[in-house]
Amino acid sequence: MKKILAVLGFLLVLLIVVLLLRMILVKSYQVQAPPVTDLTIDARAAAGRLAGAIRFPTVSHEGGANVEAAAFQGLHRYLQQSFPRVHATLTREVVNGYSLLYTWKGRRPELPPVLLMSHQDVVPVEPGTEKDWTHPAFSGFMDDSWVWGRGALDDKVGVLGLLEAVETLLGKGFQPDRTIYFAFGHDEEVGGKNGAAEIAKLLAQRGVKPDFILDEGGLIAEDAIPGLKRPAAMVSTAEKGYLSVELVARSEGGHSSMPPTHSAIGTLAAAVESLENHQMPARIEGATRRSYQYLAPEMPFGPRVILANLWLFSPLLERQAAADPAANARIRTTTAPTIFQGGIKENVLPHEARAVVNFRILPGDTIQSVLRHVRDTVGTGIRVSPIGDANSEPSPESDVRAPEFALIQRTLAQTFPNAVVSPNLLSGGTDTKRYLSLSPNVYRFVPMRLKPADLKRIHGTNERVGIANYGEIVRFYAQLIRNGAV
Ligand SMILES: [Zn+2]
Image 1 (cartoon, rainbow, N blue to C red):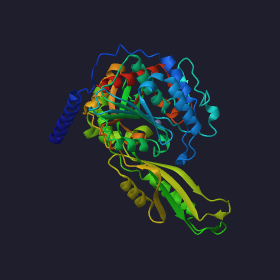
Image 2: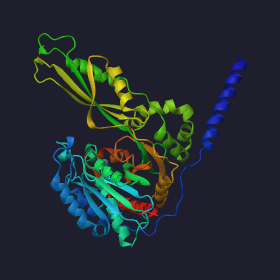
Image 3: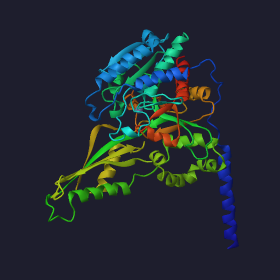
């Protein structure tokens, strides 16, 4: 007995030593760089121009029908008026009616170019929530601290921020060595089929192979990571895939006075519940694992021991994450029932009930493996079919050791010296999925500062961006262009 206790004690001490050693040995991935001193942005004036762009309701409608032509054309004219130097120097092309492609020719066309992206369209305001907005969604209202309105975060901040940066650099007489492209799609919110896909096709025809691509996606998370006091600049190096699956249950129908034990509605409800109860497995790997590696050295003792020892604590972290939707989305393929339909009259059994479940696919899973999981889980008696044209496989992970990632990291060190930079997995989708064949270095990030409670403003009510933060965003873009253009 004593012997066993002694062995156990020894093993425990050994374990603690290993945990502590691993914690001590993690090396910081952060870099230092002198802050930028020669880029002053008049944030209020710039924010005023962003506010003006928000007033054009460039809403994307489901299915890509009814493009808001007048709003897009109005926005295009407004951009031309607001950024005269950009429009005097860069080539501007309108692609497929409403998307915009700008080319800033470099002095050394033999160098691979850079592609910077955003999108002009916005999601609609959910009917019935108009009154909940502090300032109307398309008013572009500005108070002392904020620009309010749909698109302030997603993603007119990117379109205007990039053009503002170029206008600023042109004012300083800057000329890039590399050619820089700016691609602003017009239907990102409904999949990018008519906008980004068409621009990507055009660039591919011209043989354009960008050194790197930067689009929206990651952001500067404040007070979001327990234990981390500094803001975290989450640069997304991969994004999840997308799959909508239609489930259809059929039954005899007929009079509701003599129903079968299981109606179409009951069968379908059981199938959806079964999918919720049998989630796809969690995995801490790829970009998510990498984000833990980058964050670990910057954390205080407790969380640092855990993040530095994923070999032991992964199951614990997976269990913790399951309770937090944002964290859960980074470690598994998520299951979201979004539509449930069936029946038209209270005393008639419907012949058919229909549901749609939206999956966001973790890298490592595929459209095929998710479909297999769905079929296995709902069993026979339910027709399972993928629907819509937004379905896409998860992206590959861009290399954090590539010089292009280092360039973004250095730019952040110069413009947000207090932020911890980390790669991460984007749980949403972006237009970059249309450009993946053009470059292996695809990053998704806009340095907007958001606290966890602000996340629901994106696609939700009271979308707004801080005026001072908008100045920082423009400055980041300008410095990135300077760093990336040589
Ligand atoms: Zn967006």
